[in-house]
Image (cartoon, rainbow, N blue to C red; front, side):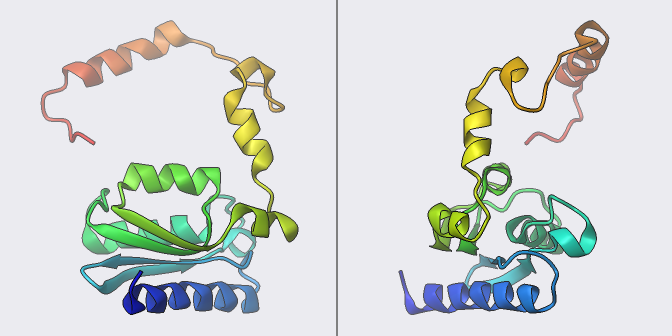
Length: 158
């Protein structure tokens, strides 16, 4: 970890404070960096936007993709004030970051009411055994769309 890494993390922590002070959402901030330059920033806006997906990492990823005009951030680093939740972890992998730095851990978040352990447990369960019931329907009607995608020659791969 370099002094530059520490400065980017300090910015993510500052964004967490900024978002909290603005009553935008929980105390979380994130910064996307490419080649030593901040490309995008974000803080949690779940409650201010009524968007349960508006976590700091997701808001920063959305802005970074918009700014760079790409859906892959494989040459970027994410600095986030707290270890990402399962949703953000998924977004990080889909964006293909080359590295992630975080300040606080899941256990720190849990002590202030942001406990994601139940989601990790739910992921391991069969869909029909989850606390929110999941049921597969109309597979045969949906399958042709997937088959068409598989044959599509001009698709954008990801």
